[in-house]
Length: 175
Image (cartoon, rainbow, N blue to C red; front, side, top):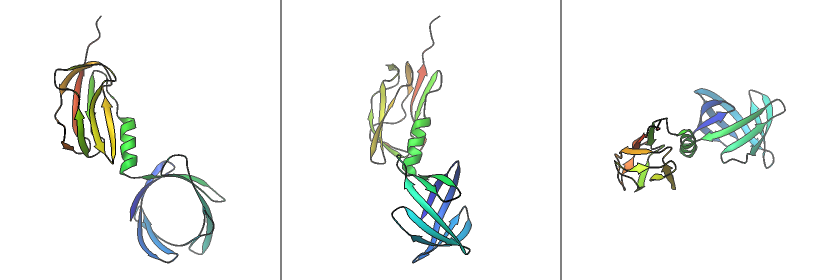
């Protein structure tokens, strides 16, 4: 099993190499660790590493796949970075640039609905396209007023990550 974890501000690739009872061998960014880990209570674990005992508490955050991990010396915020997390992050970062509104697929998916065609005039906030990915449907809207220049996909098409779906040329402001 392999996970990408965001530990505070640093991302790390964690791979489970071997598990025998409480003994766990993992690699963190290709550095191997052998630990003995035991669940003590609901959210508390005891870890034995190189002869040292470390007790930690792991508590789920309000956000999905976010955890607060603390021991007697430090506290860490951990987020599991998977396809769903990358999708949410891409959706939050996606936004139009001034004068050009390019809609790209944030992850592989299927085009469910296309509301516009080249030459259509659109208003800011107008729905343009619906994409189904990760068992969710996402509606993409125009970020600004403009004219649809290009729609290289059609309903039923499968799209790849970052694939162009709609391009809108922003209208110039009248002086």
